[in-house]
Amino acid sequence: MASYLQIENISKSYGPKVLFENIGFNINEGDKIALIAPNGTGKSTLLRILAGKDKSDSGGRITFLRNIRIAFLEQEYEFDPEKTAFRQVIDDSAAYMEGLDEDGIFAYELRVNKFLSNFEVDRDSLMKNLSGGEVKRVALARMLASDADFFIMDEPTNHLDINAIEYLENYLGHSRSTLLMVTHDRYFLDRVCNTVLELDHGSVYVYRGNYQNFLEKRQERIDNYNAETAKVNNILRRELEWIHASPCARTGKARYRINAFHELKERAEQVYRSGKVSLESMGQGSRLGNKLFDCHNLSFRYGNDVYLDGFTYNFQRFERVGIVGRNGCGKSTFLNILMGNIPENGTLTGVIERGESLKIGYYRQSGMQFNEDQTVMEIVQDTALLNQFLFSRDMFNTKVAKLSGGERRRLYLMTILMKNPNLLILDEPTNDLDIVTLDVLEEYLKDFKGSLIIVSHDRHFLDRLVDHLFVFCGDGVVKDFIGSYSEYNEYIREYEARRRQEERAVEKPRPARPEVQRKKKLSYREQRELEQIEKDLEILGNEKKELEAKLAGGTLSYDELQAASARFGELSAILDEKEMRWLELQD
Image 1: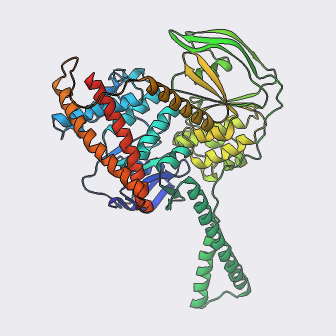
Image 2 (image 1 turned 90 degrees about the horizontal axis):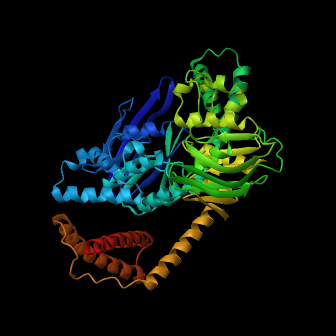
């Protein structure tokens, strides 16, 4: 495999804080790498340096393979609010389109339309009217349409609903592009990536395999390091006895031994701590009565949009419910209604009865309202608690303005949990939190002696914590599914497969590909597209037949079998898409 990227001796610091120093690694063609590190340790900064948006302090060397195409997805997408989604992507791609001829431009525009459609974004919608999740989809459509060789992505699943995440997951999983991405979505990581790159205490470690393999190998590394530290401590004790027993040691040999003693002492103090958040000392919820929320025939409308239509449900003590659905279907609005925060200009009917003993901790997506000039210590004055939440002593006097997005989220979460609530309402709590924090937060919530209502797109988070789901289906319809998200997803897949099978049973056979009488004259571009699709169908069909023969032959090695299986799935998806477009043009 060709080496796509070589990094040597790059460093980055902000004031006294060293993010990483003289690090280096290599990325080969076909690598799909997840970069993992705690918040505030330089993940996004490293990606920006690689994408040419920032610079290394120490110079160093960053070498990409010549002529490969690179696409960079940042967390925040800058856009013109007055442009349509389609025009925004096209104008952002001006440099890419400069070298294309008319056919190339036409093909690129088709790809843009395809990805906007697959992400369910109306190409003619103005950017200013799009939600945060829809803006993220436009940014992803721009990245994928570029058909780059190398994708660099910073939190690609943030603000996406589960359907969009699963589409992106499927596409990248079958793509031949090389990937380097920061993500906190553990299912997404496992299904897309084949390597984990860990940035830890300023150094880089590479683990081939999935997330579980990373956890196991990382723990082995930590255990080995601490075992070496224990050996150094034993040597240090012997040297300390010599120091105390000897007079002032004037010889050069003695002075050398004293210097070596101080080096040993420094190494012995470097006991490795993985920095996990411990929440055991925190309260586990005030006493909770039998009544939480009793909802009777709730309906909520905002203009012509219906978010709830006759919703009736009594929430029970110790209940754990997850809320899922597409962006914009009313999930966060529902939480606000439960809290008595009725959106302006909306119309609510029905009744909500609230329990008298409720003590609610409400974690909102937009709930952080810190004074930027306040320090961490001024917001939370419990030093033990700050340490538990990964705020080391040298950060106590750090102002909020200097915290990373993930560090702010962690601080905000801490202010919610420390109030000792008996009902936690969490609206997208996993956004911007690193994987280490998520793992421990899940452990805390598993043991939480209260009730949980969680809106989340993190499938792993939902699977571990909730007993059933409210599925917001749109138009005010809310369905209750008993089980985990993975069980719900499997149910939907089986249901859709049965529905398609029933539809095929009554469908007329597809028309053969030879020329047929067209109902209307195609434009010049459409005619060219139709001709190209017919050529592609023949070429791809032949490739698929050859792969079928190889897969059935039993002669492939394990690696060859994996590659052939992946290409077979990719071909099937491409053929389906091209056949659908061929039918559209024929009609």
